[in-house]
Image (cartoon, rainbow, N blue to C red):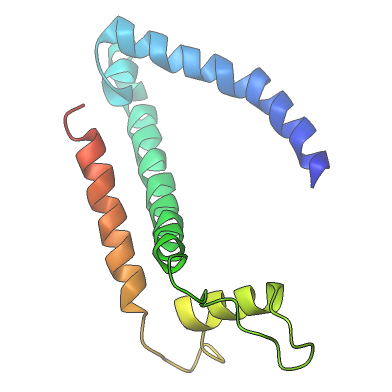
Length: 142
């Protein structure tokens, strides 16, 4: 696990920080978002700005679902006993197997195969909508 941190930190300082400063500088110079900035530099570059905005939307869409799972676990952590703290039949102790079984079985409701259609957990839908509303409320004023 720790070997990932060295290239991550290097990439962060070599690429991430300079690109952050570049984006902030372009936004202040051209007084607009990515499409406005790249269009002001050259009209043919407007597509790069739109792809940047589209990429950000795709990343946000992915992470909103993950944060929805975190919201579900947050509210489930107030239950006594914890839903994932179920003793194992073999060892008699709860642990990773109970947590993994709870996540895939009770939260995601994973089916036995692609041809078997089971229902979607409505709790995930509600949590995802809640996170989208929180995201909207935190950024709609700019």
